[in-house]
Length: 84
Image 1 (spheres, rainbow, N blue to C red):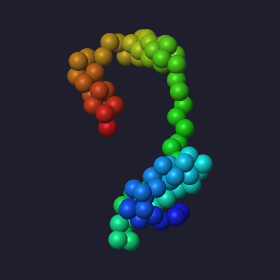
Image 2 (tube, one colour):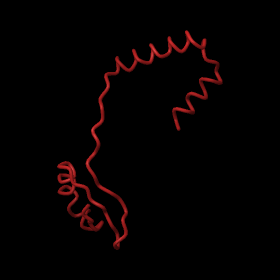
Image 3 (cartoon, rainbow, N blue to C red):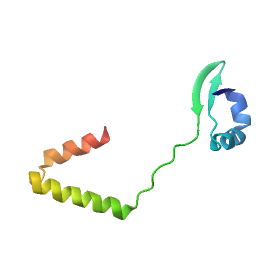
Image 4 (cartoon, rainbow, N blue to C red):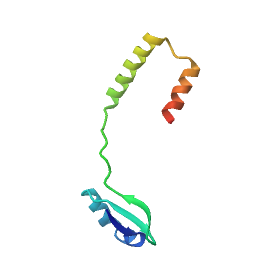
């Protein structure tokens, strides 16, 4: 991985982004100390909103069938778990 001083990175940011888009990664340094890494973004899997909603509804129906409706406490716990 190539090291680039923060001042050089600021001056040539567009060029570094273009190189990152082509797969290169850079360590941004300040006075020789690593500050950050500039690397290509990982592709994200786009999901159709309708498919996500259908999947959630199916999960909800199955969970209710097996365990009954969740209590307010269980719902709060699930929300907190999802934030973790």
